[in-house]
Image (cartoon, rainbow over all chains, first blue to last red; front, side):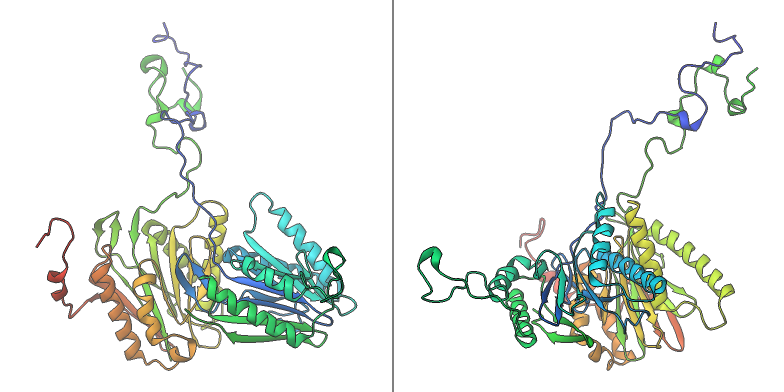
Length: 255
Length: 262
């Protein structure tokens, strides 16, 4: 009889805590914490001849509430100090702001390490490649952001890293992108009387001057503000040229 | 004789049968993370003025809709120069409070006198902590406001929440306050320039007005509250304030709810 035996029962639950049952009797119920949110906003980047322009609105939202009217989305990256005075790269992040901040700080730290190790700033295309590996490292718990990297390439031509030489991201991307396609890339623009049907010739594409891009971007945002509640408050414009980075803050509607 | 130490001091299996481990108060099964707040604090409101920041929160900790604890202090000072206001889960607030106490002691030993962490440093620290915990899928279920002064001795006010989202603004409010109090505060401080013109008296008055509106309309609020004014001179924290001059005259004009038919 087991009752009088001095041997412990070896089959069945034992004394170790780790051996305790791991399944609850009623089966699994899962309530999961959602680690993401969307803080709204929109960013735009346009590459020109000798400059790259990055723009973003400064509104931060959660749901129908405005967190703040001034939370910049475009950042200077890879300067030798935290003031970023000698930075040569711009990064815009839109989507989940906390991930955006984390991504920005990580890329900035990497660019700074590169600068200290090699004694020269990271080029934009090197930085863009590094950014893609950082994003892929978190493939299965992604940074919930749309990131655009901008700067000047080795020939001082504007470079914008996303997929196109001009790009909009974020809440109102679908409102702004068609406008940019038409006005920057001259999509659906033809030379009048150059032919009939498929013979019709497209308008020749050429990089736009800076002043024109600036007013195009302002127009794009002004119209996005009218139609999207998550966009507004102020427009942050960053223009990178061979002389450095210029920052402008223009007002947008606050409603 | 059973020689295994695990078995010592426990009822003998051969006499009483195998021990039913499901009675043990250990964490059986998967590691558990906070999935929802239990005892909660409601809004925290704060506004900048020309020399500093005013911040307030009521002294209530609710258990669902039950007003469970009525003397919970939800503002805590840090290093005598900053104030953190806690909304959300109270146990996570207490964890953060212990953590901050430890941090401030460590910092007080490490750094030169008068060179402790300021509000900006503290906010960065807390937001990194919150983001780290959300990335571990084990969030601290709070929304925090950090008030104080920055590196240039300018008023500093910033927020962080369970996701690690951060933002700063001339006025900030968490929870219901972001809907009820923020529009009132934005009337007085729509931007940094107007906040920099606000007097301390006006800022305190605006905050008290906000606390009153919150008490009128937020069912998880209370008329006993804490208020702190942070300036260069230090922190003036009052933890036992009572809302005054309320008027419930509007109440008998409310019709159409519940059983009231007339």
